[in-house]
Length: 68
Image (spheres, one colour):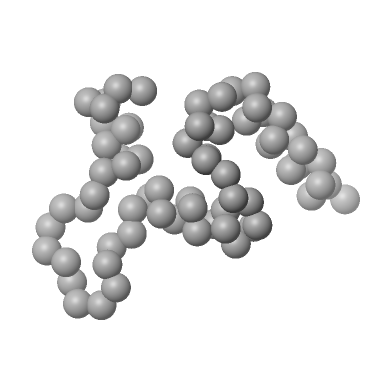
């Protein structure tokens, strides 16, 4: 994906504006990383998202684990 596309800027961009007191603002990318760490998955999720076949295989594996 090109760096000039709006989806890319949402993915890796930094929030603009004045920083409020307290913790720094989190980007969407940071939220995903935190969720993956909580689930015990340490991976390059951006590369995974770009690889359609691997992403589908991993998703089906996860869905099979969660199925009753």
